[in-house]
Length: 301
Image 1 (spheres, rainbow, N blue to C red):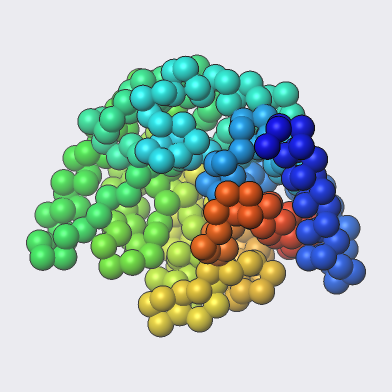
Image 2 (image 1 turned 30 degrees about the vertical axis):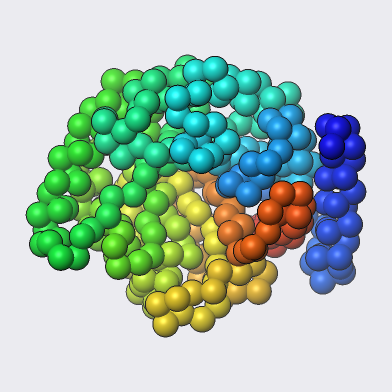
């Protein structure tokens, strides 16, 4: 499909999806609060070219993106030096930035780690999301946590030398370091938050913390580098991820966010449309992004 035709298709889809999804139930989207930069994770827009993605994201109303520059992402680690400048330039033309580079990096020995971070820093990308550490539950957890801490210490030293910040996302599941948040925060708090911080994911925090998630939110305030927004219905260990317009994300979270000192990026994650490929995956995710962004702006206003 020619680029022009695909752009026309995307713009038409965004407009139609907006009319269908929002109807008259929500007020017109308000400009985002100046203290936060509203960005989106572009994992499901990877079939698009750099220019097409920049056009689509800007048209929706985001101010920047969280871009997967990792194995299987927009750009493979070995191609960062050649491709990342092109991607950043395409975004710049639409007034957008990469505010979080999602990486495959969790140690200084990760493939192309140092080169990736140096290129990112040179291009003005302020932070990157780390890859996870995982537990082997057949081995003592405390020993594995010490081993992860040693890796993190070396990585933080490299971050400091380069001048870039790592953020670690809490996930949900029995094998993830950081699922209960207390474990990974114990490691991160030992370092300067300019070099490593938390990417607090309220969706995963609620899956694991149930009603105790405000404790974890309170815990990470000294080392809060980014906030991730996603939602679900049900639980029982297997949440059904869904739109923030239909989930169970409590108003208390938005109240605590507004009352906090946090003023960094807020990344909207739309990861609940499954089994889609190609253009269908792109167009439906763009429609979901537009609907959820309008709702998020309303909650933050």
